[in-house]
Each structure stands twice: as C-alpha cells, then as structure tokens.
Image: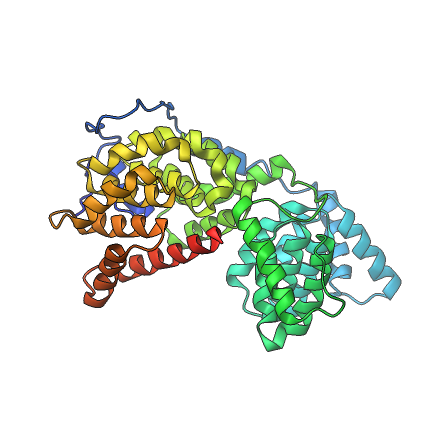
Length: 429
C-alpha cells in the first residue's frame, strides 16, 4: 500500500504513531473528505491536551525532605541493606508497609542492581496497600530477567488487584525452576478469591484456575480479589499522564513502555484514555485508540467517546478497529457504510470490525468484498478475517491459506489475525 506523509487519511492498520506526526508536520489537520452516506456522526470538539497531561504528570511530588530521610532509613532496614536485629527489621518493615509515601522508595528499589533487593522490594510492594504501585510493577514484567523475581512481581500484582499477575504465575508453574514457588503463591491467591480447590490440587488444576481468572480479568478489566482498595485517583492519573506524554517523542522505547503498562492495567486506564481522545495532537489520539483496542471489551465504556473519531481523517481507521475490539455494537450502523467507502484503509478496517462484532447483515457484503478480484488486498484479507469471525468459512479460510503459502501479504499481520481468530473462538466457548 502506498503511503505519503500528507495523505488525507491516517496511515494503514499497522502504522506507527510517527505517521500521524508527519501528517501534522505537513500543515496540521487536513480537510475531511466526503464519506459514504450513513447516520450523522456525533461531534467532539478537540483541543490541545499535551500541556494538560504534562501538568498532571507533575502532580506526583516527592514527600517532604524531612520525611525522605526517614523513608530511606526504613527501606534500608526492610530490604536488609544495613545490619539490624530481627525486631528492628520487623518494625521497619511494618512502618514502611503502612507509610502513605512508601511508593517513593519502593518503586526505585524494584530496579536495584542486586537481585535479592529487587525480590524483597517486589514482596514489600505486594504487602503494602498502595495499589497504585501495580503500574511500576507491570513495567518490571517487561524488563526483569530473573525468573524468581518475576514470581514475586506477579505475586505483588495479584495482591494489589491486578490479575495479570495470575497469568504470570501460570507461566511460572510451567517452568521447573519456579514451579514450587509459584504453586504455593497460586494456591493462596486462588483461595483468597474464593476458588474451590482440591485438598491437594494438581498442577493442571492450579493452571486451569489461574487461566480462567486471568481470562476474566482480560475480558472485564476488573480485579477478582474481594475488597481490594482502588488506587488513589490523583496518583493514578498522574502516573498514566507520565506515560502518555512520552508519545510526544519519536523514541520508540518509552512509547512502547507506555502501551505495555496501560494495556495491562485493565479498566484503571480507561478514564484517562477517554479524556485523551479529544486531544488535537494526533499522536495522543492514536495511542489512546490503540490501547483501548488492545483492552478489548474491558474498554467498552469508551464506545461513545470513540464514535466521533470515525470522521477524523488521521485516526478514523484506528477508531473503526477500536469500536470492533471493544464490542461497540451500537456503532454498527456507522460502520456498515464504511464497507463501501472510497478509502481503502477504512474499508479494510470495517471488514474486520464488523466481523469481530459478528454483524450478520454484513456477512454477505463481506463475501462480495472477498470475491472481488479488483478489490485491494488489504480489504480482501480483512473480509476473509471478518467472515471467519462468524465461524467456519471455506472460501475465507482458503484465501488466507493462499496468502500464507504464496507469501504475497504481510506475514506478521496474517499471524496476528490468526491469533485473534483463535482468541475469538476461546471467547465463544
């Protein structure tokens, strides 16, 4: 597919945030092209948001200087970095767990050069009531190399209400080196959630229970641990804002870090992502749409906020995909006309979204798109995927298999579509 920096539509389905930046550099918001007739889209006035997010990110100040020394001393004792008797260490540990500003020393300790310090820091995070610490813990999952430390991070996450940690415990049970450690933690975690287990559960029983709880979290974005405290809204918003402002840069690593953390935060990230959808900065809108799409049905509450972006020249195709992934069935009347839109990217995105939403009236139009040899390959691949979302379809399956055999289409995209179809089948079960 040919792309230029100044196109009137956004980049393709797999394009990066940098494409949107180039579009702005070419003269700001392009004019909206004519669209296929359909229901009138609601409007959402956009405004600059980057400065507001930067200000919000700055609202997470360090504790007063007098308290900083106290926190460092408590941390040194609790992490056993200084010699002290067991009673003193115990008191320091309890004080740190209960201190409202403990995050200020616990968070940097998670990346300490000594592995034993990182392990104990992760354990302390899990023992604290500071559920906002799940965000830095999530980022540790991406970079931590020590298998035992990863188990303690996963344990801390599940204790703080993020069931993504249960998925990592499941993976740790599958590894001989961490099986016993993860298994003991898993039993306690499942019992705390009211899961009935055998008196002596097998590894398979534990793993199945963990996988079921993890799938539920991915679908709902809500913790399964009873009575877990919600993170402080202001501290949570400040941390998410810190991640979102990284999209201003062209550096890929911090942007990927931001997406990694927010996608694994469940419903916690949805409010600030909804707020970000009205940003006039296209890279902010793009990031918000991508994360919402990755969150799937857990982000269903964002449906009304995403809908106006169908008319956005820069992020319209992202909005189409997002509405499909979050299960926005109310958007179907707005999506159907896009199957006939003159823009290839919108047509391709619509074929996939309507398939994911299993819109029965769209099945035959999808067949027409698939069978049209003159149609763009992106649209035909999307139509094949959309048809397979409904169930078995010989023509669609044969078309995708032919692409894989002939290697005439982007292989990572085909692999992603295969994975998505497998996930949809699991959801139906």
